[in-house]
Image 1 (cartoon, rainbow, N blue to C red):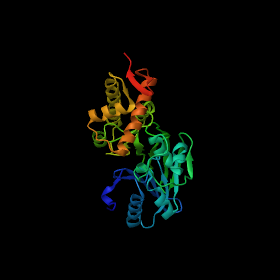
Image 2: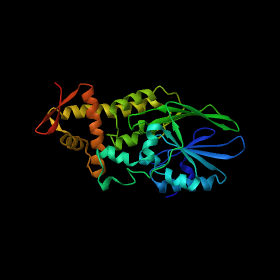
Image 3: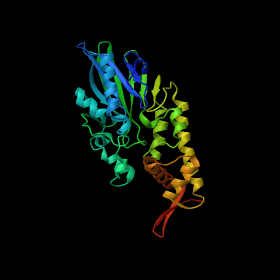
Image 4: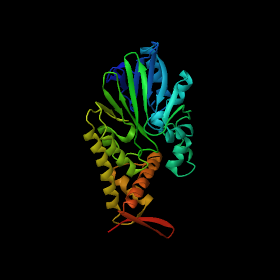
Length: 316
């Protein structure tokens, strides 16, 4: 299925986004030399998506040059189109330092989820993007400027870890003064939350901190990694936080009787109405272990090693 012009949602003079399963930021302007330039924020989940995006650019902006893909993080559904777009256009890839390592060595992602060398069933395009070289690496919360004929477009890198190792968001200020925040997966849209109440995260504590942090960002529009655009951050941020807090409480409640991690995973999945297949078993299992770490460090649960099993229990 091709990308259509109806999917390109204009937000300001030079900033749009492609409304897709993974939302794609679209920055287009004429530089000081009059050249038509395009920058993307993320690239979708695979090379097919990358090809569709490039076809869309060629069909609608035939004189434009794709200059760079600016990635929020290294999950395959956000950088899966990178390798194709780099190969076809020679564009650069920009990312934070931690995510850059993972994009260059994507097998680390499946190793993190599995906890070792993964079984071949996990080596799919949904979890494993093709590797790509990163040319510009962000060290901390930097600010860049795109120089265009009408003035400057500012891009501020905002650190939002938790969902993944070194995830960042991008706050863009256009020449017309409009501010657009591309939030990556620190935010999920309402429909995405309803569909997947337990969202993947690597560090539960940092995810909560990032949700509080993004609420301090002032912008006209907020674009979640998945789901609908919002112009008010408070409600959607609170919904994301509520999903985390309710999952915490569910885990603690399930530990009224001690359980191993795998026993707890079954209980949580059954209670949430989730049918676990291989990838979900690993993703939600990894997420559950992140919750257990956070709850343990906060003193709400404890564990014992008995009969060569790690058994979790809630504290009375």
